[in-house]
Length: 263
Image (cartoon, rainbow, N blue to C red):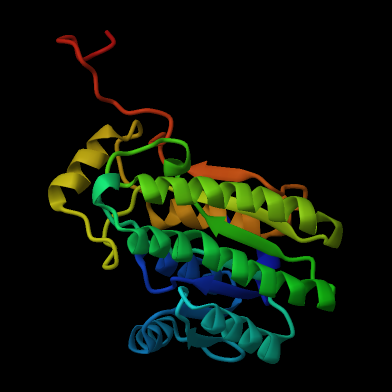
C-alpha cells in the first residue's frame, strides 16, 4: 500500500465505521498514524472495533443516529470539544435498500436521502465550521458510488442520492476552497458483506462477473485512494471524484451475440 507520512498525527472522523468499507477506511487511517473518531449506530460494535484496532490516546468512538440532526450536531460538538477541529472527515455511512420505485414508500425514500445526503451535509457543515474557526486546512471525503452515473433498477433512490452527493461535494468544494479546505468524493468498487443492506449470493456473483477488471474491491484499493485524498499529495485537488472500481461504472461485460471474445 502507498504510504503517506503526513497522515500521522492527523485527526480523522469516519462515519459508518463498522461497515465493510468503513472498517477498511478506519484501518487504513489507523495504520497511517491518524487519531480517530469512529462513529456508527451501535455502541457495542464500535467498542469491539476500537478494541480490535487497539485505539488509544486521543482517539475515541461515539454513536450517532444519522437520521437525527441533533445526534449529528452532538457528534460534531464532541469532536470540537476533544480536538478543537478535525483534519479529515470521511462521510462514509450509507444505505443501499432494494425496491422498485413503485414499491418505495415516501418514508423509505426520505430515509435513503436522509442518511446518504442530508447527514453528510449536516456533518460537513458542522465539522467544516470548526476547521474554519481553528484555521485547519482540512480534507473532507465523501464516499460516493459509480451508481451516481450508472442507473440501476431497484436502487434508483440510492443512485439518485449519490448523484446529489457528488453535486454537494462540488458545492462544498467551491465554497470551502478559500479556507484551504478540500472536498472530494471517493468511489470504491463493489464490496459485498454489508449487514445494513444485505445482498444475495446470486447478486454478488452476478455483479462480480460484470466488472471489467474481473474482481471485487479490496481494502488496498480503497485505502490507497483514501490516503491520496486525505494527504497533501492531493493538495491541489478539490471538487473531484476519484473512481476506483475496476471499471464497473463505465460499462458491463455482458454481450448479446453468440461471439463472446474479441479475437
